Figure 1 (spheres, rainbow, N blue to C red):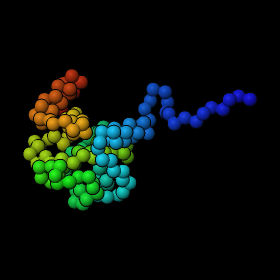
Figure 2: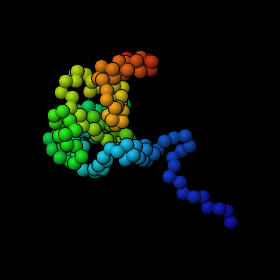
Figure 3: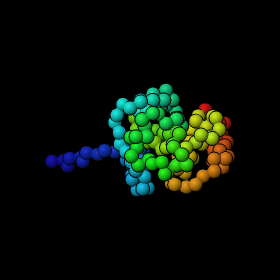
Figure 4: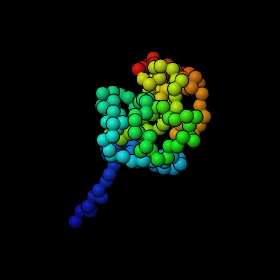
Length: 155
């Protein structure tokens, strides 16, 4: 009798599955000391982010203002973590339908940053790792990365 094949959760060889992306992201969040909150709600911010990424499928990041009631869902976000209340949320779409958020106070950020995925990726990384960052330094680094990739700053 031929041996039965073991069921596998892996996708096609050489292809990453959505589950791989989500698992990796959750593992990084939990091992970095970050507080992870899993939500399947239809809160206004969840709906807004879903619609944004559906309308902009090439984007992985979104910078937007905090929506009323959103901070109350993030128990680990306290006034003491910020020089004032968080004003914005940096959203990363890990996979379609799976997003992660980080809060920041960025009242003084220049206009146009919200549409620059390369810069938002660098900002996300610095925040996730808890590294201090200089916004102008991140902007210059994003320009270099985009130039090396053969693309201008894209919005």
